[in-house]
Length: 616
Image (tube, rainbow, N blue to C red; front, side):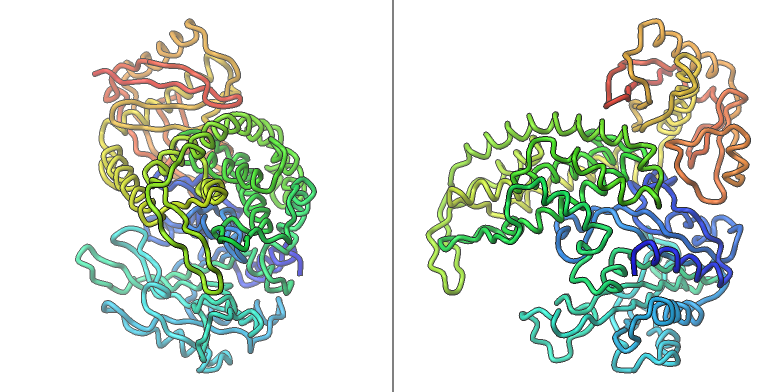
């Protein structure tokens, strides 16, 4: 069964069960505290938490998602950065019985999977929450044999809450048994089953039952209205339904990988291990390199189409990272410079019927990736020169049964970390270059340096935002000022101007917008004057909740043309500015202070950046 049929049958099935079909939201979430849309449930958080009343009791969608938590595992059978999540939701309507019944009905009757190959997991009980006997009962009633129902603790079978408190509950995962031929030789368990990790059992669907609310004291209390939140990965389902060994052999990836094979000058069947020493597994199989390139260029195309641009911070940093990783793996595969341009068209052709935004943003995608390729090529050359300078700091023997290797020598982990951070050279490339000289990185020491950097970064984020979810008054003032700046730029330059990103701190605001030319001194002065005139008028900042359709009809601006939940917040500043936004904002423009532009510069292809401050 092809991926398009899987999507279609999923939506048709739940539509027949009374679910509202909801379009995929953007990869840039409406929630300003989230980096990317990483799950289908994100656009429904206000309904699942009970904050907003849902306009419907049941919903289903095919959601674009992006995650980097498993980036080091991309290239194996099932891990990706970009993926599609099939999901169905109940907002205080049906619960476990219907969710379990329908999941099995769809998998067995519509997708024609063998029921005898399905295994399920349930929550075994932990931390004051009892075993999920109810879920077990419904699985048994649906013909899942007792020996195929496995119990796990909170790490595997309890979802949430998102923060330290809030809605959460046990989950029940459906796993598919691919057969003993997929069982790793390293697995010696006589009762191998779900969560073994050997490759035989693949999780294909997770049913989350939001029954509890976790309090600040750590207590779990039953929610008055219980919700259902499910998610099934399209790529994994396609792999199972098409009887493939990995997601990368389905039509979701195969055309892209075939194009990479045409370009690459390596042999994907060649194993680069020598008889003298062992190169790290992450870089020794060209096939894996091709998979990583395919995954990363696919993810990059979708991110750019949704308005993300490469830069040094937040979403832009992630985009830059995956593009540079793809370029480096292309170098490992002996691809020509700027080879990604040749692959973009294949990605767009493969997905444009389902996601037409890729076609409409084709020129932007090509331009952004071409420019990034040129910039990184210079950085990579500099970084490789630094790698070449690395010297051993001591000897350590690598041992492998059956091989008598020479002594491999460690290099300074701090210097390796510096090269990774400064030049963006991925660790895999550094390992390969060092292996040529019988050198290696002490990865334990390198991880210590990475953890130090992460702790510093987390501290910086806390200082920047005043703690998770807590924005200071000054940041709120800067946020409202970006709305005024946005509208002022549209008045000065033209209504084609659109926000392309922003960053707020208590000290300053940064605003990216679509424009191809450097602003003149007169344009900057006029923009400042308009913003300060509105501030001086002491206008009320008003928030209204309405449907997305009503918001657009009312003239509200929507960043990146992204799709929003059914109900959105619209912030208006008098009759001057109106935008869909999650907040926060000041209540009156008199709270903002004097607006002053301190810098205007290029940010990317067709994008300019303004940095400004507020003076009290």
